[in-house]
Length: 546
Ligand SMILES: [Zn+2]
Ligand SMILES: [Zn+2]
Image (cartoon, rainbow, N blue to C red; front, side):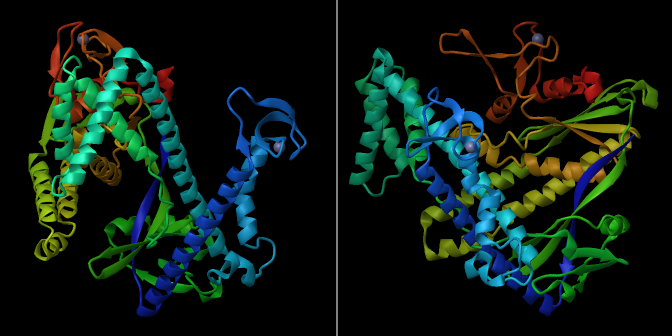
């Protein structure tokens, strides 16, 4: 079975000074244009939000919408008339705002973006606008999520305040918050953190009958509410790093790259690029598949500016049809070690059984924490000399991490290909879950854990060696489960009673837990190994699931 996989090939451009100037012109125009588009979209949104009011849940009525004259559920009120949600959304939809700021039918340069910026190609305007709209949408989703969380937290706190016992806890927490602010006001040198510690000490003595942990939990809730209540900053680009380019503007012909940049399409020019073995194998495929939208990326490293073309490519790859025949290599990650666990299949001539290989990351963690501490120390000094030294450090940690991860993923993929001719790599895709907030201490652990990059590199290197990779989503496999009896491990409350919430594997890993002891069957096993065993048991294809 051949499976099509999408990959992005990075092409480093070797531009002439003239071309560099033209690219810069394009980037500048995009910066102005994107900011302008973002503001226009937000303006349309705010105008709609001011005119139409969402009624409370349960107050929606059924009837004919005066906007579209259709029978619908009406949930928005504007000057005594009720509208349907699609009519309201239309006021700030991509199409509406686009037609308002870019002429869509006839070419009228004077009108495009109300003369904020001039571009020779109208297509650029459209690409720019869709880029801006996508950005605005993600901003809006984030803002909505924040508002939702804030309202929930507010309600939770006011509910707690009404309770007899919990009301006391909230009062104590509020007192800590107030006292810490007073301490900070009287003593400029004290840090916020120390002030909180001082204030908590006093308040804990004032309320001896409350468990201090309850108070500190309430304090962290108040802190979260405060940070959520701060107004959000509307995004503005200080610099643009990526530009979407239309498929007509980038063409591969006879191993040459033809691009049109700022000037008109007939000015299409041949652009030189850095080619290597890796890129050469894809060039013929790129000539065939010329109808793709690409991104132009700008990277600044010190004083050197380099431009990359991100070319998405559809590649066909052999994936074994019968999953029973592959040797499944499960890779599990934690901040201090990586485990490669293999379950051999007898058919492949390697015999049956399991192998384990551990990769320790202690060196990397030391380097990274040292870097963070050094930086913090210098920042606290806050002298001219220390600032100069911070500047000199640059992105040193980032570079060492990158090199380390390249070596690590290379070693892992080498190991896999050496051990089996018919391998399949299975990973637990943590990249989607790692954004979650795990509290102050765990967030720091998360920061020094470059797992996302490690997984990306392994995917990439496996692709080059034609080893298929299967990713399981973070949500599916996050609950901590015993691999012997299959029972989910549940949390315990203060009284030692188990609650319905399962413990999350990622939290346990971040906390630094090494082993898992199952209370049901009594087995004790390393946490990563447990996770690897769980993953290798999962059905590999959709058909097997049924
Ligand atoms: Zn309507
Ligand atoms: Zn068990």
